[in-house]
Each structure stands twice: as structure tokens, then as C-alpha cells.
Image: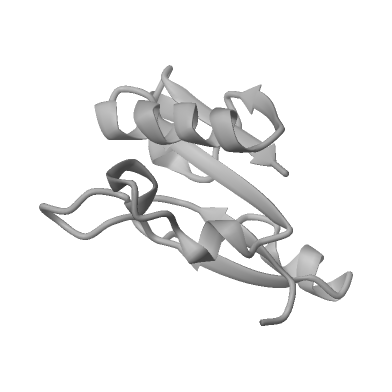
Length: 105
């Protein structure tokens, strides 16, 4: 599989920087998160091929949601994580004080 940067954006919103990254020659893929009533495979022990095969992961997580806190902990345990808080991708994020975004790998 070709190298790519994975955007982990629950809900599957368009990544803010995807056009810029693609202009630089990076393939971009989006993980919209697990479907209703299911858990992220990182949390079930199944692993996530999408995350494992990415050469970088950009994520935006809502820490008000327990599953998002668990995903963040899993990213921290598996990868080197550089984070910045308060990065928003739309009006809904402006209202959240618990948004946590970052880059891993």
C-alpha cells in the first residue's frame, strides 16, 4: 500500500490541510471513526491497519467522550505524539473547551 497520512476525524469531516498535503505529494486518508454501537479497533485489541500503515496520523478528538480519551491514550502508548490543544476545524469546535488535536508518528 502507498504511504499516506491518516486523518482521524470522528464524523468524517474534511481534513483542514488535506489539499495542502496533497500538493506536497502526500496521499491523505480519513478515518471517520467507528459506526454507531461499535468500538474503535484500536480499543478492542484488533488493531487498526489504517493507523498502523500510515506514516503519520493527524487527529481531532473530543475529550468529553470516554472513547476518544481511550483512543488518545492508545495513540500515546503506540506512537510518539506531538499535540496542540484548541485546534478547530469548524464552528462546533469553537464551542468545545475539550477539543484535543495532534499529530502522531
